[in-house]
Amino acid sequence: MMKKITGVILILLTLFSLTANAQCKINNTFFQAGEDLTYDLYFKYGIIYTKAGTSSLRTVSESYNGTDAYKMTLRAQSTGAVRKIFSLNDTLSCYTTKDVVPLAYFKNAFEGKDYTKEEVRYTYTGSGVSINTKRHKNGLFKFNETLTSNTCIYDMMSVVFYARTLNYSSMKKGDTSKIDFISGKKKVNMIIEYGGIETVEANDDKKYSCIKLVLSIMDNAFSDKKEAMKVYITNDANRMPVRLDSKLNIGSTRAMLKSYKGNKYPVKTN
Image 1 (tube, rainbow, N blue to C red):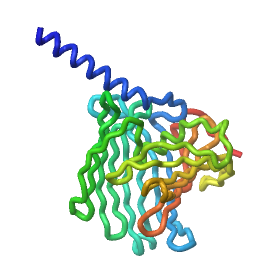
Image 2 (image 1 turned 90 degrees about the vertical axis):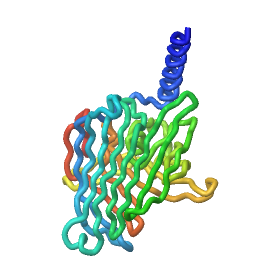
Image 3 (image 1 turned 30 degrees about the vertical axis):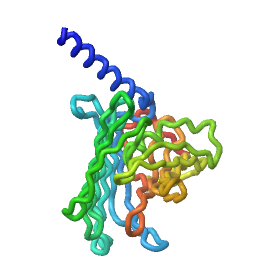
Image 4 (image 1 turned 135 degrees about the vertical axis):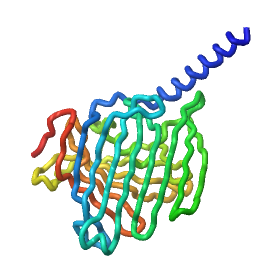
């Protein structure tokens, strides 16, 4: 009898977990494993962008804790004269299910004299999701917090891929989507604002019709809006990132598309 009860409990727990996980599943038709994008990296300190290095964004298939997953990795590094002024060597990666449900996020960032290491791990339960988030900076422990959410929640990497899947066809400039987002050890709101269609000339000498997105974090009881990133994605079936503007503690960076391969569909250019 005890074995039967235990078996029933395990089945129920599995079903609850699947139910919570299923709430966040997305029918991804835009990107696939094998997508490999390279960028020229620019650094802005003050008002001028200076060519500073290289960046890449790659998606592969991997297993994460026994789950068939995507691994997305963003690398950025400064080179040449700029590296002597401001050293940058960042690696951000995330794992999601093939349905773009976040599983984990890792950050290793060397910026100037600072080294930051972060990890975020998601565990799906019947009531939602539990998120463990940790940070060390310059070798010192900063925090180890566990948060819960009854809604889907994203990190700095998975949110970019989530944004690629939204339906923008019926949106007007200024329309927004709101999601839950992990910012350090806090759960905050992120606003994805549709900025209309713009033509972006990339560093492969091609022009792309792009959907402009502004990603902002709403903190301090939703009264403090802080822009985190601007992303320009192709206005076609790929939604491929052509330009990414990101904030740093000192200045900001801009990644401009240099080359691409492994896209799911042919890429449209103007």
